[in-house]
Structure formats: C-alpha cells, structure tokens
Length: 62
Image (cartoon, rainbow, N blue to C red; front, side, top):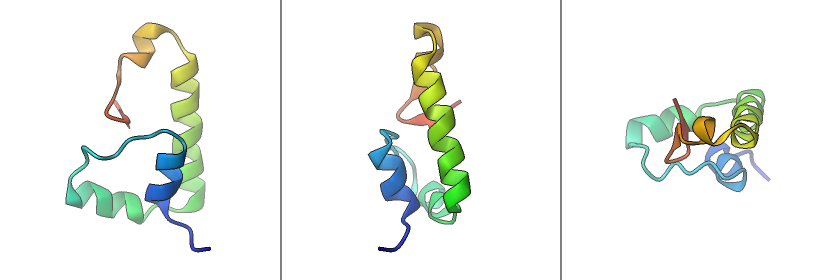
C-alpha cells in the first residue's frame, strides 16, 4: 500500500477538509516521518487542557 499523508492524517483525526488545494498539495509532499511528527503533536495537544484544545481548529494546528 502506498503511503498517503492525507489518509494518515485523516485516520489520526486531523481534519483537512478546510485546507485549500495548495495546502493539500504541500501536505501530500510530507514524508512519513513528518506526518508521524504532526500526528504526535496533534495527540499531545488533544491531551492538553481545554484551552489548548480550543486552538485546534479544523484539524489544523496554530
């Protein structure tokens, strides 16, 4: 099975439906290590306080 960053992020609960075509293209170019890092960060933020969780909008971290 071919690695697909968008599928991996979606399986991790990171919603990229609000991302534009250019952003999706950048995400598609991410390596497995980069995606793993994003998934790890996303998980850590979700485990944080409600205030931290409030800053996860549309699956994108900021």
